[in-house]
Image (spheres, rainbow, N blue to C red):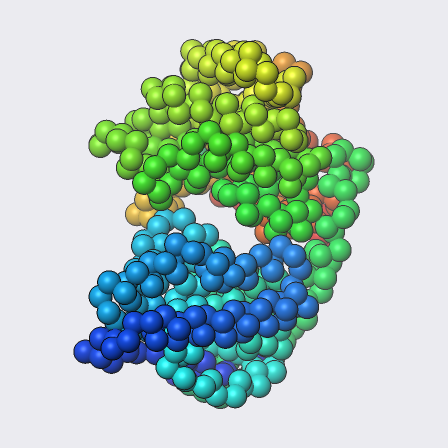
Length: 579
Ligand code: PEP
Ligand code: MG
């Protein structure tokens, strides 16, 4: 491959790296077909137990090493091995299969664990999906033990760029990932284990490249730009030199951003803003806290309902919400009631097939048609409210009747729990998401029924511009900077402030450092975004004066096109950073 060609993937951990490739290929153990039958079942069970004992010891070594390399939150990634090894049901299924079909231990392990991994990898939840890699890795370790395959010496990867199909957490520890320059994998996404570990170790990483292991050869020189998502193989010296400067600048910026974690999120004239994180599962909270999040501004609870054959009951939901509240204490957690429909299908709810799902049974409409779902969610939430600072909000509100109905269900549930003698917080703020043009036009009325607004710019953009947010054919028409969208946002925020209440923004726009400044200028007091954006937004925020932001945002409201807004934001950026 020449330096003019380049590989792309998904940036898992930002940075630049230049080094020699190390191609890591650890082919899986393949079992010979037709040699399954065992002659002595009890001997097979003994072999299995011996192999498991050895693997347990190896995993313990990995965990000990992980303790020295990672913080507590990241170490949790390694717990799934132990959990799998302690999963009695899984081990019973393996021994049952061995006994029932008289097959050898390695075949039973492979069959049961592969079935388990395949079932999990079909799930749509990226966090759960990752467990499939752990299961396959563990299965391979047990197979190698059973077959007496001795691993070769581990390579020295110091200053190399590791190129692999994928890596399990255990492999990353054994391979001394922390000595690497960079990491490239064919598989994985931003939430894959490899990505989490790379971020924890601050190693530039690009995952999901699909072909890196085929396009790069061992000892090729590789230039990784994990900022603009480019990988060059055997680059020209001029290109390398160009990147050296970017790399130095990036390292400086990274250091500066890391120092901001404990810096208060306020403007130079002391106007404080809550910078919070968006999450889908409580497991994401430790990472959010590390970035300095001062709360969870959007907990998308529908993820708890997805990719499973049954609905989570009240107890399960209660445990989940309580865990989120306890972890975030004393900061607030804004939990959004289930937002299914649209592009988030939940087959076991039996929702009708619709021609226009985004304009159909979505968000609060589902919850109000199926009040038993909403009641269970409210019961679990109010019970959890005793354990931290909870706020509840509802998605897709378009009419006053909807919020009146929601309030009545919430009040009913509150009375029911009180009658049962269950302790709950004396007041829980209730808010709505502003994501339909109707809710903006009616904001002055809606605000009378709620404590706050949270503006969902992703949907508000789609519904204001009538542009499907997921349709790549019309991607260019999906413009969150469109003046029509900004006017909507401004109007909703002003309505909240006019009623003595507050408004936040939790759509993607809140995580765009320049647009975030406009939102603050409009009067938003809380911005919630993916955790990775918090430091950058804070960096911009702390270099501005609030009165200045008001002026810039007034100018934005005068713009006629998204392009004009974009030019204005560029001028704002240059003004702040004086470049
Ligand atoms: C939004 O619409 O902006 C939002 C935050 O909700 P979601 O992306 O989950 O639809
Ligand atoms: Mg939305």
